[in-house]
Image (cartoon, rainbow, N blue to C red; front, side, top):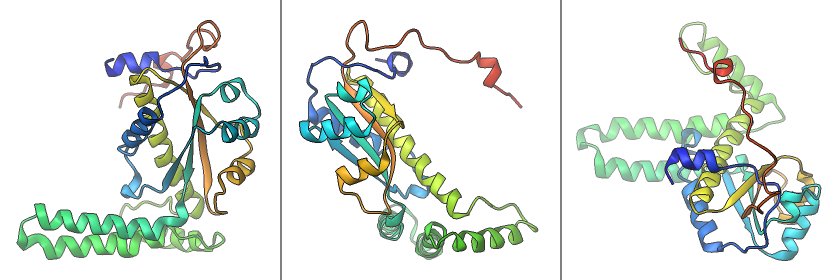
Length: 241
């Protein structure tokens, strides 16, 4: 399918058939999902791919026993891991440094490496750190003070960075759903769920957060889709400046 065909075919499927899915193909779609853009390439997420029948039943109950969950052949739980920001920053810095050595003229290595070390070694740990909201206040004060003299990002509170983390995870989830459509599989993103129960089923640490659960399967003819797709008139949401 072309991208346009994929986008038009993808729907939030509410009832799946009993046709099983190939777990390897779902895993491949998750590998493609990791190609989605991520803020500062921090990739503060994890993908939990569930095919075990017992776990699926438990998750279906945690998703309020919606039809799309109770009939799902597999599920993927997208989880944000802002608490891993230091580890990921080190990994991204290491990869960027290696890339620098391979693809950047030698006379520019020092300056660019210094910038990378400042960005991932100091700025990212400072931005993503949490401290009962207090660190966010400090960051806001610093940003607004600098903003008196030049443009600067001011959405740096702890709540702001939590939103950034969830947005990056959601981009990966959307990429996954489009990849699944290309494979001939269907999906449905869910936010109607008890996140505490989902975390308990997956044995997630306290700092982890559920971004969304995506149910997977093949739509059942006649009741997989709830009516025709509706979108607001394009001119209502489109603005050209």
